[in-house]
Image 1 (cartoon, rainbow, N blue to C red):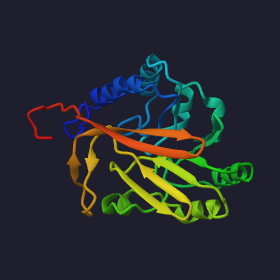
Image 2 (image 1 turned 180 degrees about the vertical axis):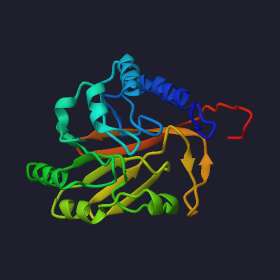
Image 3 (image 1 turned 135 degrees about the vertical axis):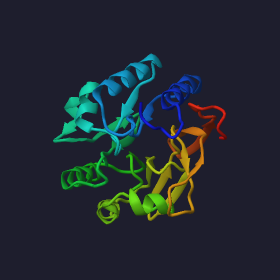
Amino acid sequence: GEDTYGVDVRANFLDILSKIPLMQPDLLVVTGDLCFRDGQENIYRWIKGQLETTGIPFRIISGNHDEPVAMAQAFGIGGQLKGNELYFEEDWKGEKFLFLDTTYGFFSPPQREWVSECLDSANGRLTVFMHHPPVPSGVPFMDLNYPFKDTDAFLDVFKSYKGQVNIFCGHYHVEKCIQINRLNVHITPSCFFQMGQKKKEFEVDHYRIALRVIDLDSDMLSTTVRYFNGHRLHPSRPE
């Protein structure tokens, strides 16, 4: 087995997944890091089966612990690959959704051009899902060691867009919101553990797990983070 800091990762995932049907969402979005260290097709196939049991439509994107080609093949969405990257757009009930690929922490030139073309044909509110927060987020350990490396290029692509852009991401193992220009960045906590936000050194803050609920209607967006107790491989250890 692998050292998961004493966390029962699979139990956390299944517990979170069991809560979701009770909320009756229209769509479930999984924003990456489906695997622990490296992407594995057998794990993707298992996760796909679990997601399908909910009966809820879902979309998945790749994180830094994933392999987008293997992921796309396992989930049967290989047609959405562009080279070795998995990114796509969707019109969902009148809303424009962009699903980006930041697996390697970069905003590749082909993806950058594709986003620019999407923005040219969009207007009004835009919703973006990506794994990495696109801007530094005041979490020293992550900002210094595992940041998104193309912030300037990302902001440059969006600078001329006149509508509001809501970005939903993860990666940082914290709950946080950052507003910059017309971009509202919502960082969702992890299903693994949450990190301390003050130190430059790695520090686990707590082992509660979370999901984010997003409510969209024609003139308002609201979002709430729901926390649940995490599962430990060694329950006697403190939370």
